[in-house]
Image (cartoon, rainbow, N blue to C red; front, side, top):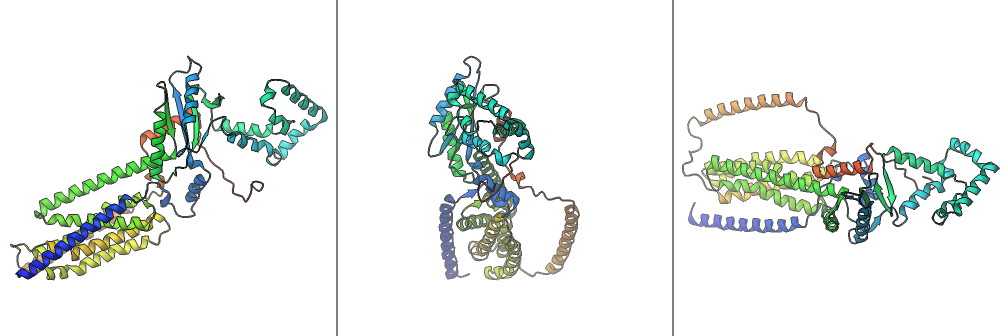
Length: 492
């Protein structure tokens, strides 16, 4: 190559390096603002039972509550006064921006209103058998006894606080409904009492506070700030009182931490393997450019995908090393062709067609992903297609500018090369057929697990906290929720 051609190549290489550097800087700024979703919601098909259940939990407010359990070391000495004092102080300290309402046994009347809903609609809830059992209570003599009992209650101190139910239900008909609620609580294995306006466990050592929060369960940033806020409040508890938090937000943060850690480990191992491979096999510093090419492509593709999707699943981020492993082949082919060829342009043109064919084959698989109903598959499709396109363009258009032909490269088409190449290709083809047959035979016994909850990476300490909550407050049986959807309350 003459001097002018070498200068032109160097100038193009510098321009390409500058462009890639600016693109990486822009991608870094974009990824810093990107929102990643560590939940499994985007892995559920739209309108599927699992997706509808997630939507119900969010719309019903069940995903926006936090349960705080306070525990005192020894409640026998003071009758639990220290525990209840700490519960009062903690409930009073919780507020905006991360807590919108604190619910205790006496707070806001929310529970009282919910419980009074059922007796007020006893006529709608009780069935024919219940009404027959109540018929005897509507006899004149039974009515007189009920009214006299109500009068007696009004004349006692109890009447100062409990006269509301006498006005709304003087004959005690609603108690039949409340008996069902009591049976429901007993069947759920709930064990607590109410003291000084707080729910207290059966052993007297635990108090429960439930708080509503505007922090969204699917927003890991808000979930992390909420938990930090609650930890700050719990740090102000007396030394003899400890607190623990139970909420879905802890699972969100735990899953995000696990995914970040796993992705970091995978990227580090992949980087170390690539560096070792190129250092030991190629023994050429320029070969590290082949290693950088797929990772640069993955970063740029991730930045573009993050701009196209408001919330990018962490599964896409975890797929980055996979795409890097696929895209590195394009650079290897170009590197070998240029280093062992006589002319860079001819070498690139010789390998361009098979490389483009390989890229199109890979792209075709991910194009099919785009038509899937599951949102995360569409995100994977866009990310993979971008990664393949960027890696292909850089391998064919940028990488050759930085490579040189080996001085000791053997001339192409030497005597005997064709015969040796033919024998080598035949051995490689036979080995491929044998390996493919073995893989098919082994793959027939593979069973796919469609349970997306198996991808839950919640930390053991979070699961242990949930187990402790159930041990303290009951609920050892498997709970269930039956939701009835209707246009209005009367229809439901």
